[in-house]
Length: 115
Length: 112
Image (cartoon, rainbow over all chains, first blue to last red; front, side):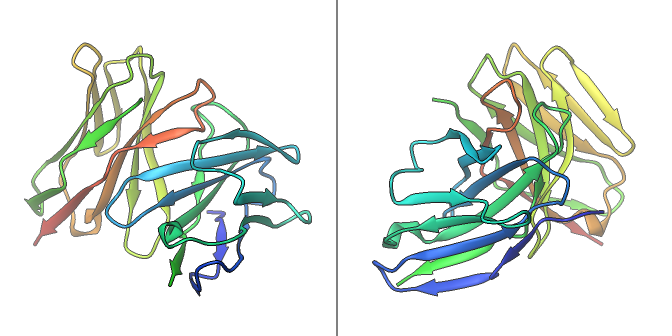
């Protein structure tokens, strides 16, 4: 089965530093997403992206966050100035379309640790 | 806002049935989902149900939806050790089905 790949699997950074989390969605998918899970908490929606634009975003996705599809294969999440509370597992996902019958394929996540 | 709740842990013996329960608050939820997460892996969609359905069966999996009580369950028949994982209930918070609100996950442990 095709899969979404995320790199790195674990990223450690200092507070205030910028980080870029990388994802390679499934090649023919058009919709891309970031979710995150803080340790001990629920998986939370951050942002969805389609046609080089943000489609929807949650309250968590503030000005410190940005997403980009810099080329035909990668989808990135940038955190401009990391805070301790940004420490979480970040999941990338992609789908071929919108709607309940469009399966969201999730990557295995990047564990971000902000020290 | 929307909220989805699950019990934290379930332990069953191999060959028994497992029933994982979930409650949600948003009565306008159109789609409800079950995801599985194995150690070190991403979230894998197992099944989903439309809110106008009461039941959906897919091989060993049975999903029951009680819309009145806002209660969703996942039954796994003949549970195997390979079913040991965390199971997440999720609801769609938009009609596109791609903005999901997740429960906290239920860790299923299957004993041989």
